[in-house]
Image 1 (cartoon, rainbow, N blue to C red):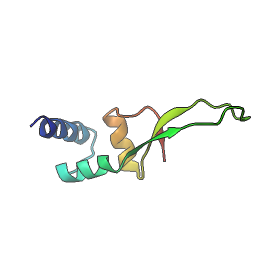
Image 2 (cartoon, rainbow, N blue to C red):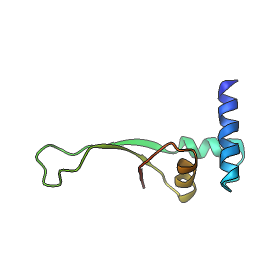
Image 3 (cartoon, rainbow, N blue to C red):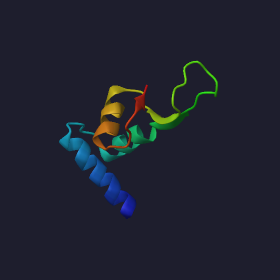
Length: 76
């Protein structure tokens, strides 16, 4: 029951942001987003910070991740 409530709430938030998916389509879109750990070897010239990012295949998935606040960094 809590999972259905959370999914329904996510759909309601998405609909307010003009992402009008059915509940199964919303869950399918969310399940396709993957979390990726981006790490750089020590001693590289780039010296970038390691981070966690989300891969999002299409624009609507990116917007959905932003609206639901599930990521601060999106990689595509």
